[in-house]
Image (tube, rainbow, N blue to C red; front, side, top):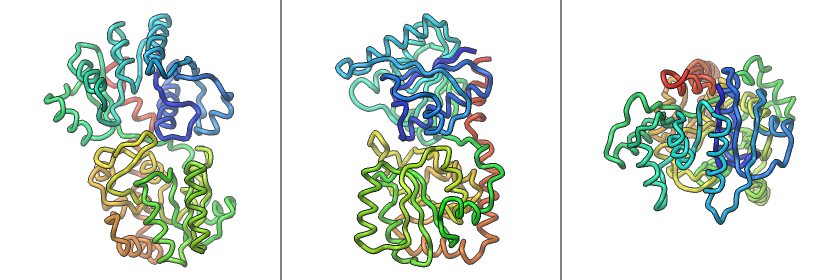
Length: 375
C-alpha cells in the first residue's frame, strides 16, 4: 500500500511531535507499506543523520515542499494534495485538518491524529467539517479523555468505526538484551551509585524545580537529566553550579538511539509532571497527554515514580508505577528511598511495566490504526 504521511513538523527536530511522526512512518514500513513523508522546508541533512537523530532503522522517502509563512501553510497543503492525486496514494495519514479535507475531496481514505483540541477561529470549523463529513476516515485519539473533550465540544458521539484510541508508543527492540545497570553506567561514564534518571525536555511544567529540590534533600542519590534544548540545559546547569548542587548531572541532548541506554542505566525513572504541562508548541496538555517518555520508561523495565495526574492512569497503575502528588516533596523522597531500600519491590514494578508496554509498541499502534479500515 502506498501511504502519504503529511505533517508540518520540522524534520529534523528534537520536538516530541517530530519524533512521533518518524516513529509512525517507520511502523508503516515495518508492516510492508511504501511510505512517503511530506513536510515543509528544504532538505538539510542526509538519511544517515536523520536515522541517528530519531533512532530510525527502516528507510522511507521524505519529500520536502517549500512553504511560505505568508500563506499560512495553505501553499504546502495544496502541493501536498497534488502529490496525493498524482501518486494515487492508497492512504493518507496526517495531523492537519486541511490535508484531511483535501484527501476526502479526492476520495482517499485518511487517518487524522488528534493530539489536542483545535484552536483559533478556523481550526474548530475545519474539524467540525471533517467530523460530520461522509469521508472514509479514522481518528486516532491519543487518550479517552481527549475523545470525551471532542464529543463534549461538538455535541456528538464518534462512530466506533471512525475512532481508535491510540496512545503514543515505543520501539521495543532497542530495550532488549541490554547489559545490567552497572555496566551501562560504566559505559556512559556515570558513577555506579543508586541513580534516578529523568529523560525529556526541560520545558515549563516538566517538574525541574521538584528535581532540584530532590537533589538537595537526597544528596546520597545520583540524579541524571538527559535531554533538553541547549538554552534550557545551560540555564539549569548554571543554576545547579551556582547553588553548589553536586549530585545532579545534566547530559543535555542525545540522539534518540541512545535514550534506551540512559533509561536502562537508571535504578529508578522519574516523571514529575506538574498540573500544567507546556509542549514544544505551548498550551497545556495535562488533561489529555500521552507522553512518549512514559512508554519508554515502561520498556526499560525499571521502577517508575510519576506525578499523580488522572490522565496517566489510562496506562499506569499502582502495579507498574508509584504515584506521588507533585507538590509533596516528602512523598517523592519516600518513594525513591523505598525503591532504594527494597530492590525486589522495584523489580516487580519494572517487570510489570515491561509486560504492560507490549501493547503500546509503535507497530502495534499502526496495526490497530488500520484494522478494519483499510487492507
